[in-house]
Length: 349
Image (tube, rainbow, N blue to C red; front, side, top):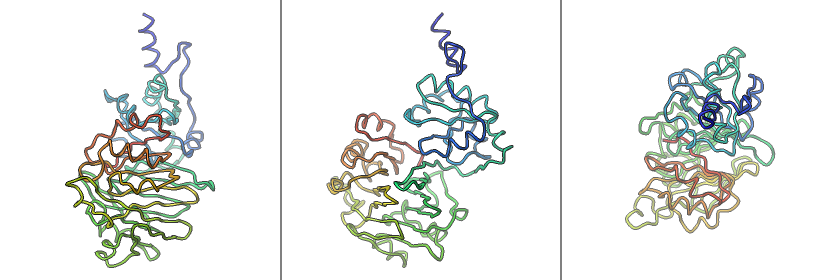
């Protein structure tokens, strides 16, 4: 009987004393909360509702799906607070209760997205997840998961695009609706990284194109960088680092010396975008990385075991597995447990 009562309380989002085990906040409090860098914004409505409009950067997990908690455990880090909302606040309260019962720290939006809209708060229809970080100088860097290896960064009002690609698999990106890039970087020539049309749409009068030598030749423009070279884009330092295959039977995919990875130092925040690579010896020299994007799709880049080894060498504070195709990367947080590396799995495919 006691066990049944505990389960019922968890479903209702209540403690044994009949109190909610999560926090409820109004629209103003919710907006202030989601601007903090360690917050995950969670939309628990249906996919159709989400597509009609949602809070920027919100992760979608439908509260009505039978595997809601399974999805939540694979996508949400317990170390971070979860800001939950739905249409009116009812489904999100139920979801917050379930999550809180599993040890998550949750905050529910009172009145849901309807209250948010009534207060004229911003919404978007773009289906991109966003992570927010602070630089050493206190400025904000937003990182958007677009598709596959395409990353958008927004820093101090400036747009940084890396390997923009218009369409892959079932996902497409309408770059015509995005601001022109201030800086656009390309790692190598393969079609899932180099897309002439995407580059054209994102290039304005002041855009600086940075590519490896082969892509600069193919595009007929841009500043070519080779492995080991450095470039300063206003106040952003860019280092080109090696990216290549080492395993027998794979070296033809990404030969040594041709392609780039990039390290961006933005107001003290160091971001490593590895490009297409395996766990190569040159990673030993990559130090003091705050955020790393590292690929995982065998046989072209790394296996999950290789990625875990590479992460232990580079030791980023936050790791984003990307470029992972159909490879299952859900085991990586457990593989890197105790290494001081926070693994964030985003929907890049």
